[in-house]
Image (cartoon, rainbow, N blue to C red; front, side, top):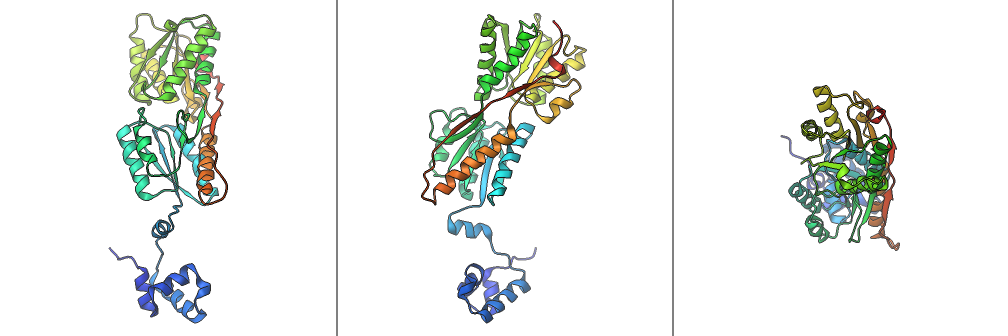
Length: 341
């Protein structure tokens, strides 16, 4: 493998000191034109490319923003990343996207990597329900913004969606359609989003005069299609099967839909289904999926903008004020919940 060309190689080829080469690169006006031309010729001849990472470490200012999400296999987080990348690019920064896979241990490893790389800041959707990883990362003094999570009891910025309102939208729609027994395929109970959507569902039931026993919870270990298929199989095995199901995200809902299709259960006539996130695949499903839409791209962009604002305040007279931005979801009604009861 060819050896990379360093600044010492350029200095040797041009017959100047390393400091002179550095000045040509960073402060060309301080170098005599003849010397500058000789150094530039050596740079071109040798194919020297300066180490941007080394320059950033010396300056203490990285041009990279970290983004750590729960699951890059979920199109919702792909859209969040798109929004963050767009805002970062406009500011001349890049984004290092990492996937915790809903694992607290993997989250800790990536946060440690971000600290080692001295990233400009981090956008984080926490996987660790205990908050220990955040507490440890905070010691590094690197700014971070919580994404898809309200910053409760902390001083950091956050951008989230009102998941209590979203859960209420989903179940209110099902109650209005005549359903009185509803399953909630919930995902890992340690996630705030899962708990908040359940709270909203119970609120909608209470508004209709229905008790919490009208909601049958089916927890899953993950928030993916396979977990949804497993929940669908469990749902099919219930003696008093609910007439509708609300899923904590669209991937779970698509898995439930697959399980119903394989078992010959008609959606929505035998079972109405509502998902959450309104990913692109929701509208393209065999039975187009009713879903609670989250403004994922906007969420990512706003989180990145808050992080940029905070990091710029570190080197400017402006004082950064931490903000908690809460966006509102909306219900998108499609065929999967439109049965007449």
